[in-house]
Structures are given as structure tokens and as C-alpha cells.
Length: 289
Image 1 (tube, rainbow, N blue to C red):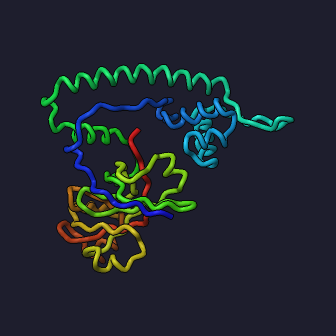
Image 2 (cartoon, helix red, strand yellow):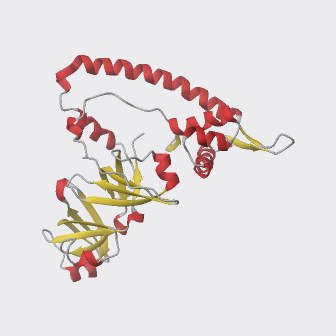
């Protein structure tokens, strides 16, 4: 394992305003993939093998096959086929549909690049008229994320500990608290996770435990890696369960679904201090593009 140093998290409003974007294929509501997956297909076309293609794009062999399986499933047809071994050995080939996808993507990408060049020129000409807008654009971009997870927490990676199977990711939240996530090595590589990168952490409300008081009280005795302290800002009671929302420092909020009996036992009500606790393995990570 290796531990990376923790750089300061940049202020989004202080970053220089620029124009960027990415191209991806979508079939209905299903995302087929973007640059990384197309690059893998192109590498297979060039090398004729999964081993060579995975090395060319910086993936593990297993990660490459996992990506291929996902593409085949999402496309609804085979894109990559294993060639039977013979005198010269086996190999990997792309189907005609996969070859067309590469060419189509490259054509769209060229047009997209021209569009970005024109947009960048327009932004440059506007100059001071867009001063301070970079942070707004970043936030608007994150609004496009759609997920069933109740909690969507934005932050920047401050540390990344590599493991043989899983990686541990530390994320600085806007209010100064830190969130930990455990993801597979293949997932970290596929997402391009690195120190300083912005990520969205997804946590189901049903995965969040609540403890009365701050993180240095009873919550400190829990085995859960994540303990985020705040105050109850909303409480919606039902016949069996209740939804409790905590306001954390920096304007962050996190919701938990707990039983009505737990609400009463903990004495939870609006304004009361409480801590949200959940395992690092309960956190899913997402990145833009």
C-alpha cells in the first residue's frame, strides 16, 4: 500500500474559468460509455488482445474484461469476441458494430472539440462578465447527476491508499469533515480516482445509523469509519420509520431512515446534536464525465 499526501482542497470559485466537456453514447436511459471505454475498444483493435489493450489504457486485465462485459450488456449485443486458439494462438476481435462505434465516436468527438474551441473563444471574449462564474458552472454540472441514493455528498479526494483488492479513499467535505470510502481497485482505476479529484459520494439513507451527541461521544465507540456530526434540521415521522435530516458544517445535509422507537430512545428532535455513522463500504463514488 502507499499513502499519498493531502493537498489543500482548491476553492472552486478561485479556479480559472474554462470550457470543457466529454462525449458519451447513450441508449435511452442506459449509458453505454465514453472516452475510456472507446479507448479500450480502440486498443483491442490495435493490439488484438485484451492483455495488450489493458496495458495500453492503464487497466488491469480483470478490469478490462469487466468493462467489456458491461459494454456488451449495455449494447444488447456482443462487441468484443474471444477468437478460438489455433496454431498461432487465440486473440480478441471486435465485431462490426464495435468498429462502427469507434468511428462514430471519433467523428462526434471531432465536432465536439470544434464546438469547445468556439465556446472557449466566446468565454475569453466575455472576460470579466463571467467573473466568479466558474464555481456556479461546476455546481450546475453536478445537478445533472441522477441516482436513487438519498445522500449525495460532494468533496475532493485528499488521500488514496492503494490495496491489492480494495482502495481506501478519503474525501474532504465542504464543512471540513472527512468521509471515507472503500472501493475495488478496478473501480478506482475505471473512475480515474486521484488525490485532488472532485467526487460525489452516494450513501443510502437506510445505511446511516444515528447516535445522539457529537462524534467524540457514544459515536466514537462504533466500528463505523464515517462519523459526521451535526444537528437535527428536519424530522419526518411515520408509523414505523422516521426520516431524520442532519445539518452538517458547511451547509451539507445527510438523511437517515431509523425506526420510530430509535427516535424516541435517542431523544431526537429539531435542534438536537447527533452524529450520522456509516461504513466506508456503504459509500459509492461517482465522477463527472
